[in-house]
Image 1 (cartoon, rainbow, N blue to C red):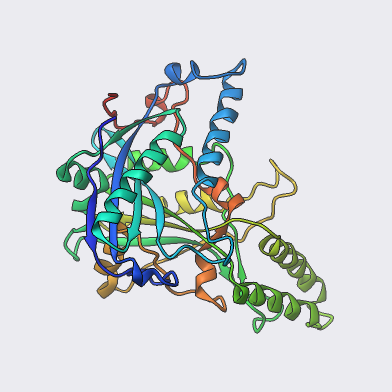
Image 2 (spheres, helix red, strand yellow):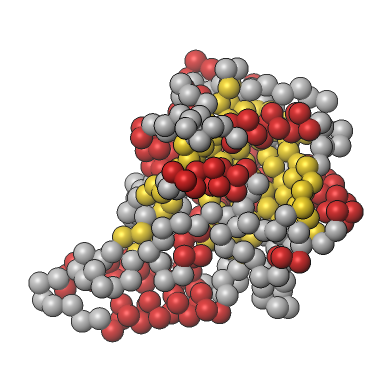
Amino acid sequence: MKNPWIEIVQSPDLSDIPTPGSSNYPWHAMFACQLGVMDHQSWAGLRWGFNAGILFEEALERQRLFLESQHSYDVEQGLEFSAIRAIAFRFINTDRGLSIVLIGKVTAKTKEQVEVLAFDYFRELTSTFPYDYILAPATTRDKFNEVTGFELFTENDDCLDVVQIKRCENPIPANRKLPFMQGLWQSGGRSHEQIWRSLVSAKQRIIFNVILRPTVLYDNDMAIYANLSSEFENYQPDKENEKVFHLYKEWYENFIVRRLTPWKKYFYLQFHIVSSDVINENLIRSIGTVLTQSLQMQNPKSQILHGYQIVRPPLKRRREWAEKIYNMHIVSWDSKLPNPRLSEIADLDEVFSAIRLPYSPPGSETLGFKYLPVENE
């Protein structure tokens, strides 16, 4: 495999939620690989089991392992590493099909260090990425700009539209003075088919961007969740709202247990849509519903969710948002939680559920699955 183009810039970390100590690592480097999705017949030849259903489970297992292996932190200090490492998946609709791109990012103290780290990370990602896909690195700056959607991210402000899809943050109907409830990312194994088909059929140019960056829950984050739990525990509802309140309380207690379970792995996980025109509400609903799906029929133990919400930046900040998303910074805006940072954090189960790599079912193109082909070296 050829070496990728390494895009190197010197700038501070412009994330809305900076990592402690990240200012000491001002050199940023990114590289990109297009993902080729095999046709169903070629993909079926990879199975170890006896049928395509087993093949699907094997593929999901490979994806889970890859995603989990992206998590890292300073075990001794219990902190994020100050040198940022992140990946993004970028889904871009084109006239010839849906382009899927994997982007890696690293930071370092010097230009020489960041270039070495970028090549090391490229080799790690390409050697551990699920082998169900063909990886084609962008080897020139022009190709890098093309596959990462640089042109769309730099559209004139009059044309640009940016949306973030988030988990809902809702007040408790029984008492709106209580803390807001935050939802979860939750999706079925094949649900993302709806996202890929919707992107392919979109009339305008669309980029669906997913960023994943390891983080941790700090002591003050744990204290916030513990205090919220105490507020619910100590609140005494009036008789009129007692039954309703206890239903919400049970949901929230399960949520707190999930967040405070020891040794869990956490990530910043964000979903954005960037478009050359106003983003259609139908597309937003198609994507948002998939990412916060109710799975009670498939899994009775799954939590019923209160859906998704969307956040649009003020008009004067659209360009700033687009630049941050392109450069894989964390965007944080309009959260009702005690600490806005918690609005962007997901546990590993949420990551497994909300990130899915495309595949080709039988009869793909006639069903609306059309992927941009890449050359296999």
